[in-house]
Image (cartoon, rainbow, N blue to C red; front, side):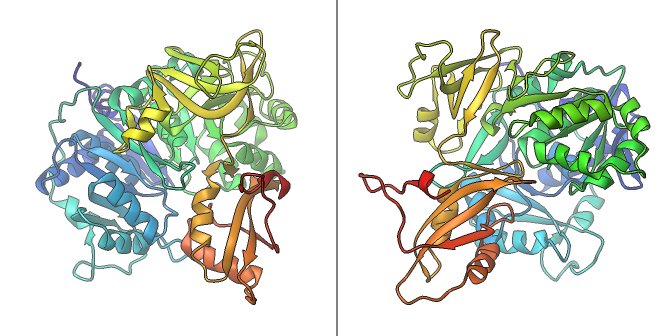
Length: 518
């Protein structure tokens, strides 16, 4: 196969436009030349520590310039990036490091409210095989060399700003993105260099992206997630754009950033659009914002009609809706730029990608207007689940990846999701699989049986609810169980609602009848 390294998205743009601004965070601006040089230092650091091409390197970092610098440094060294959700707890971190066979780990120190570094450091210490840990300082102090982990700033300071990028086969694994499965155990989707490249470059057709007329992107979507990583980060760098980073989405602050930085491209999940519209007040220069904004894209779940309508009225831009999964790099389909939206539709397959609807036995559905499971084939489909041949074999056959999502298709070829895979919950744009939560809750001494479901929520789309059967005589309260779960699970996973029941409804075969619990 041809040689290609995903880091060329950065190096090629840096060669052409070295002084163009690549990343903005607060008052900090980083040019393409500076970004390229900083990522070279990371590549040199990894090479100096014996990290070889093909080795896995994990990264826990919110939307800060460090993420992009380290991400591309890992790629340049020929290694595989393993981005981790910054909300993971110690045990979850240790699991991901071990499952991915990570050899090195970069983690942001975090803050008092979100001590990422502490959880990451403890998870690293409990893992086997991961030998290098670099703590990215927040500037708040607390860690110093000699007290614990090696500090990132010290480690990269002596490294040269030049590096010969390692040549990779385009079918080599560039990124492993973790996605939860119905078994409750997260699985790593192996994405090739070409998977990620072609998905980022799809912006030419999808958004009319042009390196000669670059966009300014407001990136509030987490970069460790496939949407933010491919569409916002990699897409921006491929087309010479500027990425304005917002570590944590806050609607009014996002509007101010859009105005002050003349943002032309915004991507978000439906709750973000709901938040933006709700935060509009007299202090927001809507006319300037609307004059600059060129593209607005959404994914995660369907946008309500009223949000489509109001956003178009206030900002003059039609929100483009798309669909994809971590396993598809992620974009598989999108609505069409310049056309009126078909509300509720996830659009049509992007160029080079096929989609169809299948039955449980993988056969095509007979009724063209019927409901079936979406299957996807094309340049975006992953290599497979890392070190899980059985799961890969079930998910991919003859190049077709089965998504588990049920949909219908109209006469013009536009797809509409009608149900999410199995019992998956989507909370604020994050996929949450009940089985993982149930298994953890069962570890609590009060819990005899539990079922986790999603219930409607005004801002998050869905909230997580646990229906619990307590052990005889136990008096644990809802608040106590929620507090315990909060310490055990990432913030987007733990149930905010606990309901106690004497028994759970069951089917004739002994399965919990979850639809009776809503």
